[in-house]
Image 1 (cartoon, helix red, strand yellow):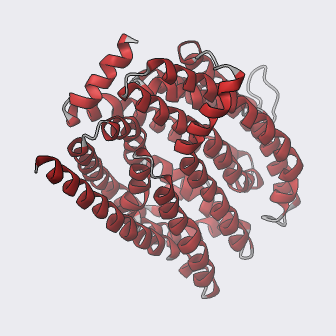
Image 2 (cartoon, rainbow, N blue to C red):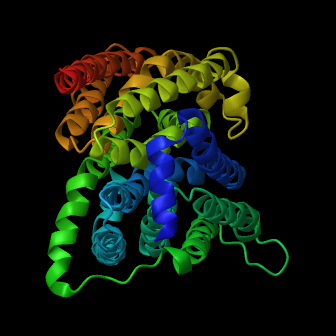
Length: 449
């Protein structure tokens, strides 16, 4: 419990720059390794077969569902625990961690059963190729049923992060990603004593990495579950804080599925380009996504203590850092799309589509800082409705309709939906954020008066 008190003192009084310097680099390193894994995974599968690469792009939204349920539940645990530490109730924080583990296992069981039922019909609506349908069904079945490690790691890592321990989750994710990278060529191509399993080998490597990560964070992240009669209360609070994160990730799944269906009317190559974009996006968005992870416990803690000035300082620092790093992504997507695509595919059609799509999408990166960071801010202060509104505006009300409308004018123009959606959602989020800042300032002046 002393660790929790020390973490609370650090979150509440430590210099903002020092807090970010201590918490953000481990998260960013873990995400860097994970992004490299995604790139290497696609690289090896692309070398194995073009149908396998298309299959990974089609199944990618399903993996977003795993992330949504696992990480979203973990965010609820993280936020709930951070608030309880701020209110000096560590026993309730520990029970929240135990309840999160139970919820992770139950959610995995339901998800695995539903995925087996719906997987093949889902893949079939995104491709007309029998080979892609076969590879997508095989890959998806393995990563869905074997995802229990991802669900447990998602909970246990957030238990550590709620106490300010970013290093062990980082080590776990790095170890899992490295295991993935090492196992990929062995299982895909059948090197040494390993059989050649193709896309099934890539899926097994993914599952093995998730299990390894869970085993690393599990011993210290495990918390005793609360009594059954208390579980409903803790589950309610966890989902109160985490539902917006779950739905935000779910919306990613919905819009990627819809975009895949639209792109499938043009060609499998167009679907592949979208999948490659999201693989590379995760690489360039690392500072932004890493800071998103770090600010949840810090802002939640200080908001609970009504330290509004510190909440503001955290947001200013994170937005400034993110804008600087995203400029690098813009340069790469605008000027070097062909070499990036060449890492994964040599198909002329994929290059032709990607050389147009990547520069257009790259223009959206600066506004994406606001459209992605501000929903996390509202989530951190317990305003899940506004967080969900911003994410829904970005992904459902803007991106999907505009992508469909632009696609009616041609595939090249369809990609313009990305900068349009990020700009609209980021602008709305900024207006709502500034409104909160004015309200906080009024409350502070009232106290002084």
